[in-house]
Length: 187
Image (cartoon, rainbow, N blue to C red; front, side, top):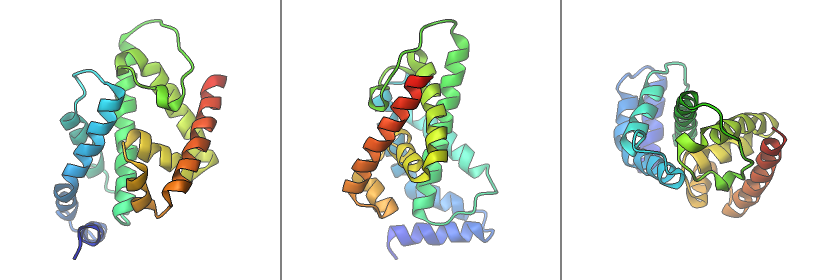
């Protein structure tokens, strides 16, 4: 059985009440989650209080602590993991934002969010709000932004997960960036 089918089988076991199945899935994909976390953190240059290990463990806690997820397959798992990573980073940005006072918000494109979370937490929060609106408007585009921006996945990895071509994903990414930029600019 290949790794993708094994993960899907373990997720089915978890859905059917096997309490250890999700831990087995985490053991199997821990390296993948660390790579996702590392890519996200290295691109966004968060400060030393948020590192790869702490982000992965926060994601693990969020996913393990949720009994109401009906795990479907590997794609669904990575989508939920990217969403959890997003929520951890947004919570972190909110905490950082609450520690500082004042400051001017700047308009940013999705690719321009490259500064430390302490300095750019308001931008990350604005991005989160824009992403919520995008997901309401177009769920596929919202999912793409979560996987690429918060999950740190490449077009190739997202293509494998979603079954969409890389060309379609690149076109969708441009649409999502434009949409999010226009929403953030209006704020």
